[in-house]
Length: 222
Image (tube, rainbow, N blue to C red; front, side, top):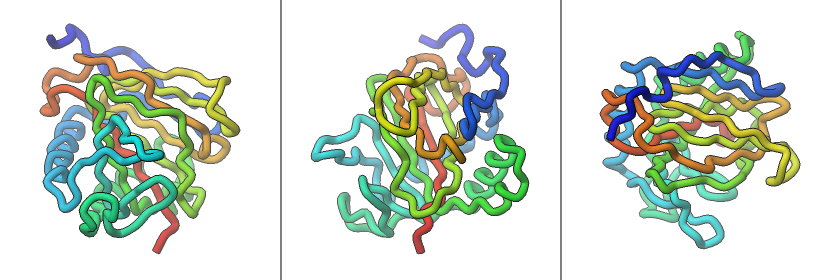
């Protein structure tokens, strides 16, 4: 059943949660969200299909696909050797441009935004039961911002500390269209998605159920 008010309609203000961690609600408008959902369905046609990445021989509960570089725990490759050996789909320039704008809007640093050159996108699909445990994004060879975009149902996002998976942490509700940027002192913060809230997406979004998360990263690979 559709909710009377989707989460993205609630009044929320941009906030820097701590040095290097920015949450910009409603950053993507409805048209952009719908267009990105259609791109998500196109990406799902291959060459590497959505899949459950194995962590310590256990499948993640999210379905993942990658652009630019294929991610597996510990690093990146140009081919999906853990799935079908196919070359990963190329990074798309509009995502690079979007990443630059995200860094500018979050940090206000025009020089940092101009230099940002994300060459990988990790796209995760969460159904109502999917979660992601506390982890760091630390497989990149360069300390550049990580840009995270949320589309669809809202999620409880847990932002932890830089040293370990335990408290202190804080929980933030991410809604459809929200932007989150990690950089600087928060670049290697542990973080997680602990819950999906069904029927909280905009009713007109062509996704149906679930949540898409797109993270843009600069790998430092060549």
